[in-house]
Image (cartoon, rainbow, N blue to C red; front, top):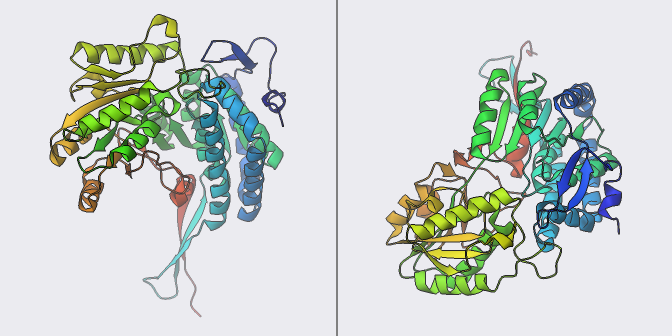
Length: 476
């Protein structure tokens, strides 16, 4: 079995560079090159030179290379999983799941690369033909987050490379190692080095400005906070660069009186406590009908109190560390504010200084929609329970947010299911399911949760230009 250090050997530095630390204990994992604006500009120039040859390769040839990349990811699954855990902190079982999820996008877009179809439209004129032709947008870039250091790259690079685009990736400063491992495997599979580059950097703002300002970059995909997304949107306006933005969320998790409570608790555990609550689609607000509240809270609290908190590589760990001390302090402040405003601890306890970068899993009851914890993205292992009286109130609370990424609904009423499909303001809904992500479905949000979609057959369209061609002189 390949060790992650062997996989990263060309990138590792003895001293200097960008230091990557284990969020569980602060220990140095590795150091790699720290790219500044000048190195990024050189990579853009190299990608521009390499782009035409990659775009001209038959789609079937690009697809074969992507398929080889997919196979290499799975062949090195354990090394990649250990690497993701060391730099992001998530439990190893979750990292193993992420490797499979990451590989699924490469497999999917290897197939979609061969299905980029144009159109021949009925002509309104005699002797003329109307065609719609699709071409790669050109050189693209991605800025990816730390919470899914593998999958957030493949979800963007897969469609870009499949469409015939070059891609440059600026990974999160905290988790560049997984990204570099993916780059090495992609190059082994046959992706030209200049066509796919990973550029770790501690100068996030400067690199983002370079990518947005460059007339060569024709598409930028970003996953991260709404605040940063708005800055990138403003900067990209100068070059009218196409954007995909997957931004913040405040997902409501709605439990109606007719719900299967055991299923709802299982879904809540999967949605809220995965990666210690550090996912953009995790349940942020639990809206529970007053008739179901006691049963739901009692069972959820019992499960949360039984959770094991520890290092991600330790057997049995269910809750790992948060990504850094600042993240812990933010979550602690939200919990403390809620308790001061009248909420009650139904499970867990408040964070203490000797917890370090770990935040205990918590269930809070008595939360109201106006508390900070119900208005802000928690990004930690805290379930905030808000009671509601009827469907209309639940929908009003759920939609009372600038975000619109995901929602979860537990009900056995099919008519209610159809009503809420229309009434909930979000891009994705899980009905009686706590995990919704898959490579075959379009992932993305509305309102201030972003623009565009990733995954599915729609995902590759984000990297294609549509060109209308009118062919005259076609008379016989």
